[in-house]
Length: 106
Length: 152
Image (tube, rainbow over all chains, first blue to last red; front, top):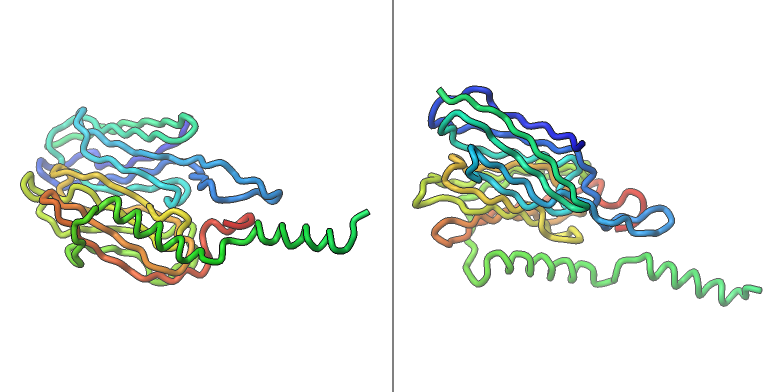
């Protein structure tokens, strides 16, 4: 199981801009490195991160090999209503990870 | 039996294979321009409104904190559609493309990148009105990314 960590404030005021931090455990192998025997190590990266808020997509990121291992992506959103934030990472070699975080808007 | 000549030839051939092409800078620059061209097309890219936060001196190119902030009200009528980050000297110029919308509230994205060599890092913001704004920062890299365990 892929390891992911997401930081979302548990409670926010309506209309407040909240910061969301996401971290996924992944080596992000670039496909440019070689082993000591000179063989190319095949690329293995996370390609996309999608975040949806109560089913509506609010953020999407395309990742490239130039993102460091264990990709950390920080972004913001407006707290509009209570519900859940869903995160989905997809990548090479059928990599897929998902996480959901509840948010209470007062 | 291996003659001295044959041995030397093999050595030279291996060295030539292992080395990067001599015009690598030109190739990388071309790829960099091409990648930016793919995003902006023929539209002019203006300086300003974008702030790329990256340390000017990087000790370890394997994990460089990058933050991009765009000056935008983020309303339905006027918001940032996407933020693109490029580096000049990596084997591939693209770093990150973030697609935002008015629901982001604030146009700010942060991540950690790999930077291969001393050069320019560029952030380009694509606005909802079709204009492009950019900020480029020159960085110095002491320990390059991608170089551990052999060659690029």
